[in-house]
Amino acid sequence: MKYVSTRGQAPVLGFEEVLLAGLARDGGLYVPESWPQFSADEIRAMRGLPYSEIAVRVMLPFLGGAIAEDDFRAIVTDAYASFDHAAVVPLVQLDQRTWVMELFHGPTLAFKDVALQLLGRLFDHVLAKRGERVTIVGATSGDTGSAAIEACRDRQNVDIFILHPKGRTSEVQRRQMTSVLSDNVHNIALHGTFDDCQDLVKALFNDMAFRDRMGLSAVNSINWARIMAQIVYYFAAAVALGAPDRKVAFTVPTGNFGNVYAAYGARAMGLPVERLIVGSNANDILARFFASGTMSAAPVVPTLSPSMDIQISSNFERLLFDLLGRDGAAVQAAMDGFRAEGKFAVTDAQLAEAHAIFAAGRADDARTMDVIKEVWEKTGGYQVDPHTAVGIHSAATAPVDPSVPVVVMATAHPAKFPDAVETATGRRPVLPPRLADLYEREERLSELPNDVAAVQEFVVARARAAKEAA
Ligand SMILES: Cc1ncc(COP(=O)(O)O)c(C=O)c1O
Ligand SMILES: N[C@@H](CCOP(=O)(O)O)C(=O)O
Image (tube, rainbow, N blue to C red; front, side):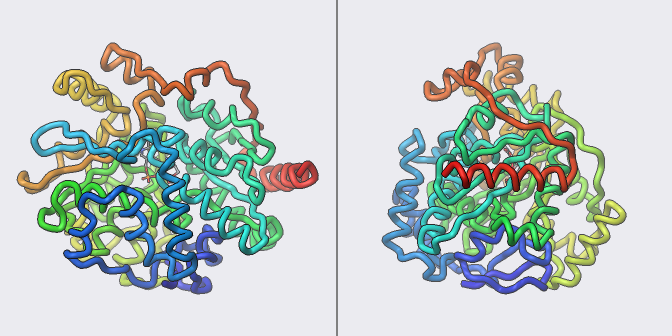
């Protein structure tokens, strides 16, 4: 298995290199040269298997032999043993045709754990084998940060720097990051939005001298391995609901487009997916794209679903690569146009191709609160978080064949957003016992301006200090 960049100018890589690379050296994102294919019989044979076994079967073709199957099975099994539900990602039925898949049973209570618990272990395996050390830089709107920190804390071969937008995450999300006091963990509260954080991380990767000197790696979904691990739960959900003999639709609360792109990948690998529904909050650049064919940035507004307060969805570039016929130069031109003018457009034919797979919905904060309340009342006491509520609204409004089951991805635990959930339902969701003292824990973070040089200086100084202390 080889990986190519969406901009066509970076070296073609194998799995180990793509895991460590993060952003491609031409500024693009890595994608598989071709999608592995699963036959109907192979999909049917996944029925009844434990999650970790489905995970091994789905991911093995992406490794291209880089990790021996038995070693990989041990890594995967260990990663999902850290989840507090036997099914890892259980399905809960909301009504006759709607399910939610709870992706929040990992250590930090959001879907990011599913990929990052695996990634931390893969980094360890590969770095130990190569005798290398990396500096991870990541951007978070709230959930990737804590999941990445939890996966990488105290690991010998890794320093991790996470940038979050100051004052724009929930308190639980911030504390989950800043209360980890390990020497190799560095939290930066950046003066800016998530888009600024992500832009800055990409600028660090695009400074080749800095990137090579520090050995930069990524934990955001620009890292191919994140997408790979997220593809698995679409297989698990569809198989549980009758695939390959029945089609399924998925609704995905969306920000950076990584999770819904993973669903697109599952479909490309042979899973019978009727439709993929993108759920947006008031930061609805994607919903506007799917309505008009034009991607046009607007200022980010804070919402009750802060992890989706994003206007520049990195992973859309991976879909665009396919819509533009896998032409790296065309993707580069579209991205240049977006950077210069804040917009780009696809043709009617390309939009029609997208519409054959995708639909989109949008819920503002008022609607989000109504959905949390409606679900609570209709189910007699089931709480959903605001991101999941955006997905449930979008599932109900999207044009999907009514005979097809719809699975809404429940991307975060309601206790990560207790104020909104309590206001809507009258009951404050409680954190699991292992996080019960979160509000009492000491916090450590550094505030920095939105300035590449300032962040570079900070990373160099902290990485040097951590190395000396080791
Ligand atoms: C709780 C939650 N829901 C949804 C999203 C959006 O997912 P994606 O960025 O993969 O589109 C995020 C952040 O990524 C999140 O943390
Ligand atoms: N919502 C995310 C934003 C980063 O997304 P990623 O999937 O690219 O890591 C977050 O919670 O940080």
